[in-house]
Image 1 (tube, rainbow, N blue to C red):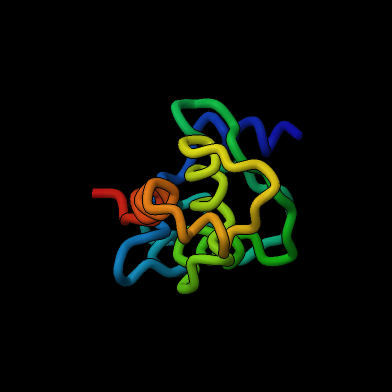
Image 2 (cartoon, rainbow, N blue to C red; image 1 turned 45 degrees about the horizontal axis):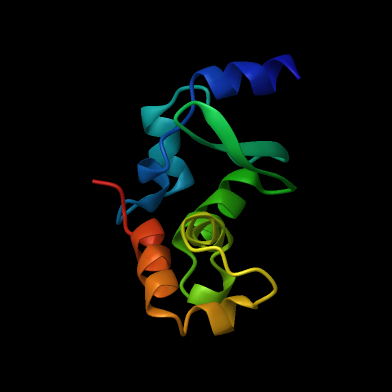
Length: 114
């Protein structure tokens, strides 16, 4: 738990996972504490507060997939962020994407950080 709390005090920005040539090797060069792929818990944060948590056998690969998923239906984090902006309870992601406001919020959430 102490390691997780320390990592939350010094997070890796989501933009570093979304860059054109983002990789675990690139993360290792920029962040000395990243020694390679690992298993465990991960926390996605916004303004210092947790917004999404998960557990994976391949934490970095999982975060890459969450943030860079190629198909809109499976982009978990983008769905979560769009749901917060345009609540549509009880509707599947595919149906929500047919609503222009939801689709715009989803595409904004998926846009690479500048």
